[in-house]
Image (cartoon, one colour):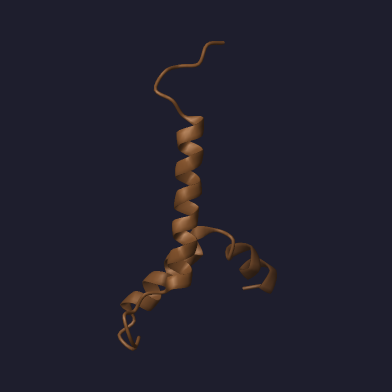
Length: 64
């Protein structure tokens, strides 16, 4: 994979989810098996997405 594409993919959460699962299920992982950096990035994406959803979406339709 080209280096620029790897740099772009590091911004999105799917790559970090893949890395966290890979480390968590690797039988040769030592310690707790958590990829804290990747899980932190996933938590940040989740918090930002939740804040955006709460701000943007409502139950009542907007008046036009």
